[in-house]
Image 1 (cartoon, rainbow, N blue to C red):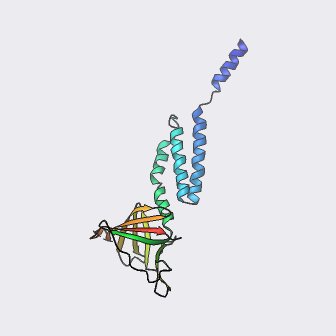
Image 2: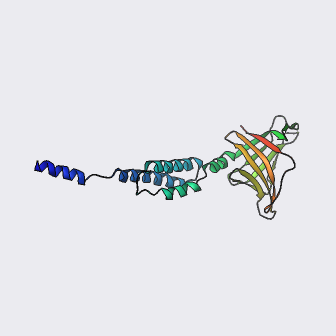
Image 3: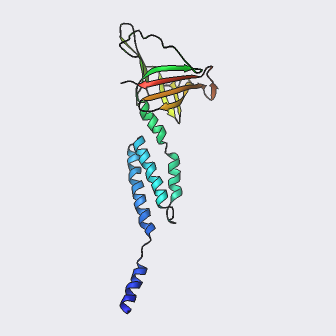
Length: 207
């Protein structure tokens, strides 16, 4: 009886709080994906980071020593959707239709039926347009502007900052294959000139 009492006492004293292991494992997972995201800020890594934090918050909900507020603040800074749009927009896009005030506009005949005019967004925020003449010769136009995505807005602004005007479009859809934008307005500083018509542009990724 004496020995069993000793063993029982040791068992009670050595009991480990399960929260210790839960917090340790959850924190380790968040730390690993955070390091990966810091090295390469892609949409995929951002989503993994966000998921790890959300799992930490659920797993440690009943643990008094957890630090949920710290991770909730990090969550506020993660905009994985914007990163995904910035990745998706890179490439060549062909305009397939324009809707103005609810009416589809007639497309102009292409001087070179064998080729398709297109817009190209590059990873360094450079923007260029390419069209073909009747001899199917390529004409590359690289305007002195940069593209930029903030939230659900796509803007084009002067590369050198001399021209303060900025065209802004609402991104209605931007996937790996489809790109739809609506003209939001022309900005000069904080002053906005709204469009006279509701114009929506539909693009498909060039194969």
